[in-house]
Image (tube, rainbow, N blue to C red; front, side, top):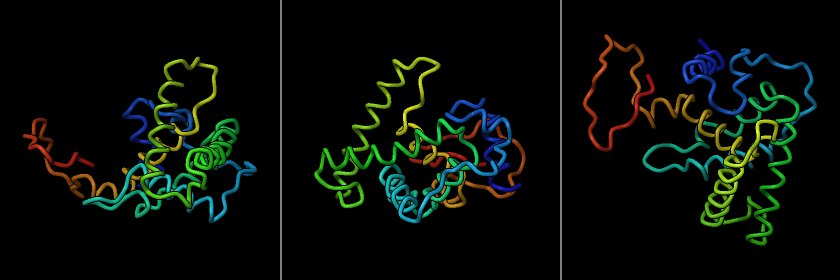
Length: 187
């Protein structure tokens, strides 16, 4: 099973609850020419956004899982044209918000400045989501955050270093004692 098939399976188990669920359910077919392209700088930018959301601590961060690259593939291959546009414009909006708040681009900002900016954008996205009507477009930061989490926890690094992983699980055990500080299961 490749990574794309695994993500589709996970999405079906979760009931397609995240943005782009229709892409999961349809199998995320690659589109021939979406007109969306990402540069190496865009991938680096998305890696830094993802690393700010999931920084390296006792486990590797999102950058180690190449989440920026994952996001670009997912946006190009799985998002509808409208969501692709929102995501691309969102990258610019995030950088503009950094310039407005910190008087420098996101990439030039310190880790603390990046963190504070993303916390503010997350609060904005949550407020937007509370008042969002079904026909309203998705919020760009929510898309970035969800892709960060999906990309990280479906990567080898995320599944084996941040979560508990058993390559060949044994019998089903429905009740396993949890000790405070234990990692969640990837398998």
